Image (cartoon, one colour):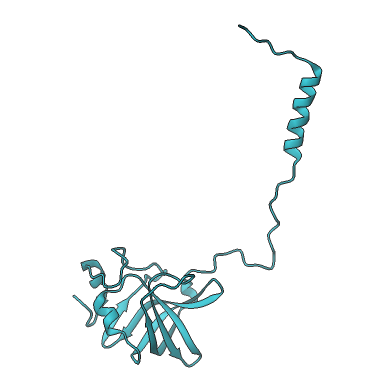
Length: 165
């Protein structure tokens, strides 16, 4: 059986009209809000790095929804309480050495996520040890199993001046 398409002017006009309608339909894209910053709000800005000396108020090892994953320190600074993001790659020995009342010097950069400010720690000095948390560009050291108590050779090599070896 063979079928033959009729080249009727009505069929051609209908197809052309359908194509024109599809091509001229408005897209639902909204214009960008010029008052809003279009860059991501959570990132390390090494140009605005700061160093603070603070007292640990609380060590937060459990993840709270809407916060960056990993260890957090709530510290008391002259400007008030600050949430310090340390990340998921600390050894058990480091986590155990941090406790309320510890004096810690933190070098890092402030960042915002979900409307909340965090100090992204690049380096911490406390109890005679220096812990390198991030690279100079803000990338977390580590990459092993990101669980509390993880202690691998690569993670322990990050700790110097009295850290785990």
